[in-house]
Length: 234
Image (cartoon, rainbow, N blue to C red; front, side):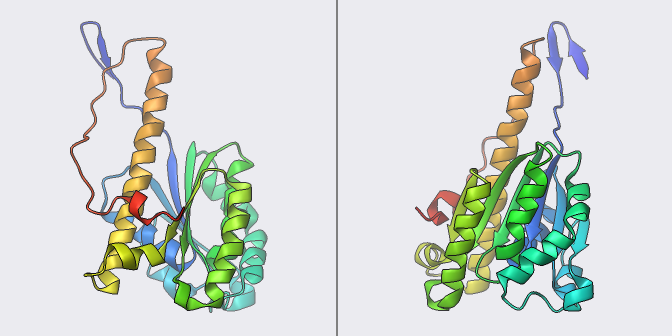
């Protein structure tokens, strides 16, 4: 803390975790490694190789004894059971955080099934929890149906949930390659999380300012080419 006259400049840093569940969620978590956002990153997956390639502060390899590192094979029921088995380990990784963001791709097994368990592990500790769900393309057939059911389940346990729709990715970014478009999606999700983090920090500052004057500065000059609002399904 640094004081100048009657002004007090305070760095308010609530503990915030970004949790990637399954392949798509872990890809977003990896993207945070090059960001300046002060968050703890946690990757959770049933796929051993994919988890090994994820850049995260904490990695939780779930159901290694059952699935032998080969993933949930698109079965959301298995994904949920795996997360349930490791619920205590997940709770411990989330313990002590003020805010948690859970990011998961839907339509497969791990993200669809395990995300709600991770959300419950956070909320049961009184942690403010947000979720970002990523929906597959309509042409993926059954995965889209699985995703719809998974999204309904996530919304039922986390009111602060948004759905990023891959169909809108194609519509909004027609000139980009698929890899480039997904990279832009990851950046849009990152920016959404960073904006939420800024809002949470501001709330912390407001609480302190009731007791004493506070001086804060925030960079609002950055503009996103693909703001997440363009990718959210209604």
